[in-house]
Image 1 (cartoon, rainbow, N blue to C red):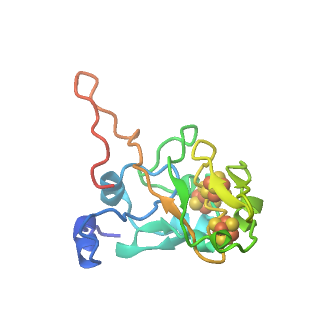
Image 2: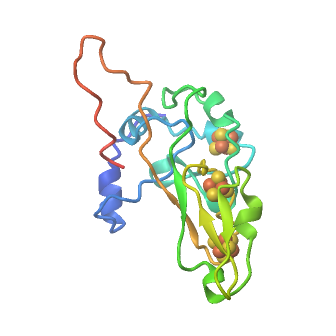
Length: 187
Ligand code: SF4
Ligand code: SF4
Ligand code: SF4
């Protein structure tokens, strides 16, 4: 597939996201956004090979995760299927995303719900009892691995992913360089 110039910043501007804070969630182990956009051929192989079917063709035809479709099991099939240099090694951390639970959680209206807690394998969400009320879910960011299993099951869409920058381990700095790599600026 021939490459077409694609500018994520312009896309965000067109969506009214002038703060550029809503970059898509790329598959796990993705390189930094600018390198991903540069080298992904948009062939769709990762989308076809995801057993959880959570990868979709997003804006510009690039793959992104839709957690409303399910969770990432970190199986690595997306990485294995890809012929482009857009993934870091699978023996590194897949990403640093965490989720956040907002005030739409129905336990704030004294309605009992444990859906997110029941889905969370690392037990990153625990129930904290309120005096005279129902328990509310409390997230441990240290335990959350960003798998997204809690997102689609929430009846009020109170859980969202907090996207973190992707590392760029496939594009190491030259050995003679004394510079330190800047953090992903387009996050
Ligand atoms: S690691 Fe597995 S489940 Fe997660 S996006 Fe890739 S193929 Fe899908
Ligand atoms: S994203 Fe995964 S690990 Fe994090 S709270 Fe949700 S279910 Fe638990
Ligand atoms: S699933 Fe949603 S509504 Fe239910 S406890 Fe978790 S955050 Fe609250």
